[in-house]
Length: 177
Image (cartoon, rainbow, N blue to C red; front, side, top):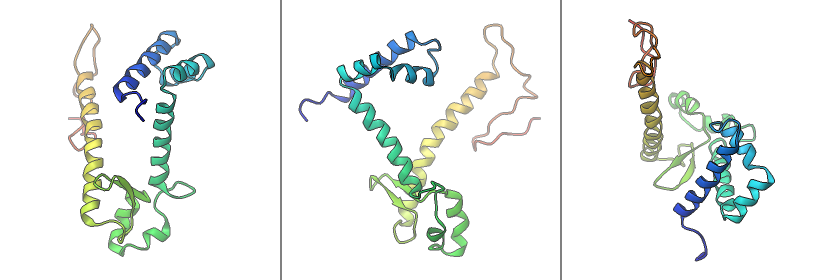
């Protein structure tokens, strides 16, 4: 393990390769176009040569494993009927709305089955707050982009404020005045 590159070095190396691919792409702001170019032999060789191939493989595997663990079913529909029936009737609508077979509990560092005997109320709250914190960042950025769109720049006009829908702190569109 002593010969592994530090994480920041891997990220910097990967950024350099991505930037090189961006410059060669017809549409350098398209992740699809960049990734397709990076899957060519020439760029795959650069990834191997620079030692970032395993980092990318691990990141891709992590994403797919997390997706699989959330669903934990062959059809990836999330919570199963058998699992739903483990919950008291008054809980089943909430569990169905959660729609996942497992949830990530940060203190455990693992996905926990969404079942009353596997997950404590404290862990459910922790998992929920974790997801809310991640979602709040998306809501914050989205809200600020909507606010930015309402400003004028570069001589471009935006929609009149009366017809522009704003996003409330809850994330749902507010009615136009």
